[in-house]
Image (tube, rainbow, N blue to C red; front, top):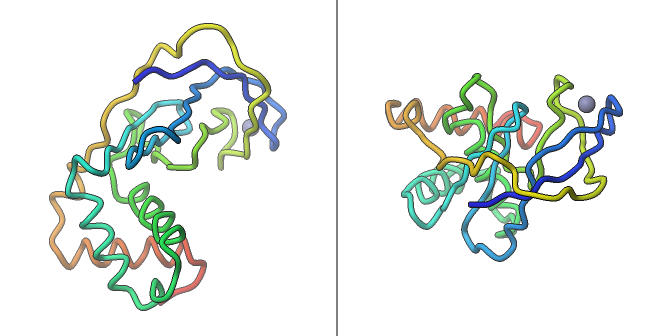
Amino acid sequence: MRFDVWRYRCESCGAEFDGPGFDSSFFYGTFVAYSSNLEIAIWDSCETPLWDEFSALVEADPRAGGISDYSLGDLIRGVASRCLDPDSRGAAFAFAGHCFCPYCDPPGEVHPAGSRDGDWPDPGRAVTSVRWDGLSDEDKAREVRVALDVLLGRPG
Ligand SMILES: [Zn+2]
């Protein structure tokens, strides 16, 4: 995939930096995740069984009952960001629709402050789930429960 170079401004620390930007609205089922190290992971949810696996575990949780498809999708992406393999330096990928400030911890909100010429040098890589794939079914269910605790802000 090709990413544009965008200029971002961090709302927390005020830093301006160049980062990858991408309009994924034309790619149905393809989600782009960014880490705080500006690495990119691409999840083609139609190509991997992971979506169905996360989806089944999230939907099995009573707290996910009755929520809209839109919110369910957000929850599944939130769970995925906690369960998929992190970037080359151990930072999680997040499906937030934008990249993160590389100077803040936790990463602050960033806003595009204009576009740059040229392509971002990193085309991204496909998401991987080596760690997740090695878990037992019980451990997978527990990880999703813990992720939902964080995402929903309350224990189950
Ligand atoms: Zn910042």
